[in-house]
Length: 192
Image 1 (tube, rainbow, N blue to C red):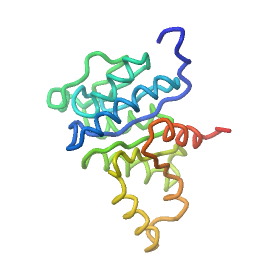
Image 2: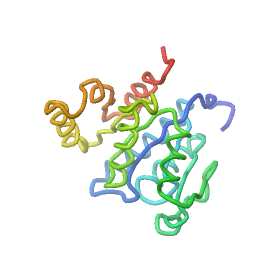
Image 3: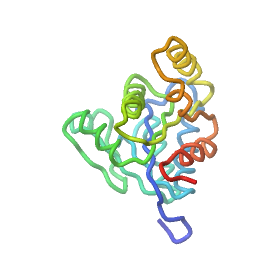
Image 4: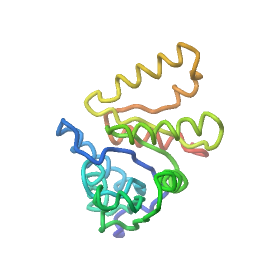
C-alpha cells in the first residue's frame, strides 16, 4: 500500500462466485466492492481465485492498493485458477480448512451474488454466530435485487419460529458497496 492509503484496520471476508453470473452488474459490483474495501483501509479475505466475481473483486482491491488474502484448496487451485498476484495466497488441502482459515482471518463477512458455495459459506458463518462461536458481523451485497428471494426466505424462517428475529435483523443488506461496508464495520465488536 502506498502512503496515501489508510492503514488496514480490519479484514472483511467476501464470499462470491467463481463465475460472472448472467448480469454484467455483478462483475461491476465486485470491482466496486474491492476498490471500496481498499479505499477505506480494509483488507480483503476471499476464496483465492482469479476468475469470475472472485477475480474481479481481488483485482480491484489490489489495483486500489489494498491487501488481499486468498485461501484456496489444492484440488481447486487449477479449476478455479488460483490468483498468483495476491498479497498472500494460502493453499490448503480441504474445503473445511479453506472455510475455517477464511473465518479466522476475517473480522466480518459480506456475501455477493454467487452459487451454492457462496450460500454454504454464508450460512455457516450465520449459524456459527447463532450458536455463539463468534461475534462477527455479516452482510448481503444485494446487487440488482439478487438476494431478495433469500431475504424473504429468511423472514419466512423467522416467522415460522426457526430463526430468532435478532439473528435475521443483524444481517446488513445494501445494494451500495460503501453503505454495506459501513454497516458491516459498524457491527464489529467494539465499534462505536
